[in-house]
Length: 247
Image (cartoon, rainbow, N blue to C red):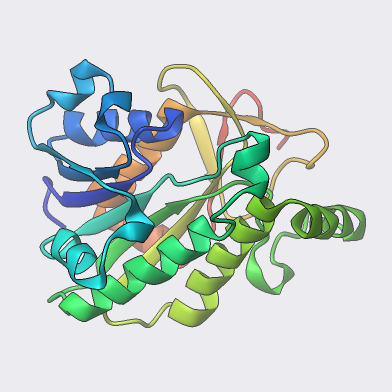
C-alpha cells in the first residue's frame, strides 16, 4: 500500500476516532471523515491538510452516495460505537455497527477496486473470536457476556458486526480484507509502549488498559506497513498497554 493511503474514517468525532484521525493525518494520509456534526471536531483537526469532512449520517446515505465516498479509498477505518446513555444504549438504531459493516462491505464490492480495500474495525475485548479461539475466556465469562448481549443492544451489535466480517466476508474476498481491533479498557494518554496479542490476555473482571492514542498508532501501522497488515489480516488482535498486561 502507498505510504500516503486514502482512508474513509467512520466515527471520527469520538474520543478514539479523533486520536485515529490525528495519527493518520500526521502520517500524511488523505482522510475522508463521515461525521454527523463537523463542529464536534476540534479546529486543529479540521484544518489538517488532506482531510475532507463529509457531514452526514452514514445510515442515511444512499448506496450511490456511499459508493462515491468509498471509491478511490485504500482503506476504511471504523471507530463507530453507541453513546453510553439510556438513549444511546436502548434507542435506535440498535444495529448501527452491524449495518455499517454490511453497507461498507457492499459499497466496496460495488466499486470493484483493483486491489482489496483494507477494513480496520475497532470493537472491544467483549467481542469473542469465532470458534472459541479466545482460550482465556472460560464458560462463566462466556455466559456472562451472552447475558450482556441479550440485555444490552450495543454488546449484541458489536458481536454481530465482528461475526459478519469473519463469516460473511471471510478471508478470501477479492474486494475486502479486514482486521478487527480489540482494545481493552480505554484511557487517555500519549502514545507509549503496547503489545498486540492474537487472543485475550486479561480477565473480563480484571481488565488491562489501552490508551486511545496507542489504538491510533496501531491502526496507522496497519494501513502503512504491508508486513504488519499481512500478519494481522483476518484476525482479532487485542491491543494492551504493556505495563497493564498480565502476561
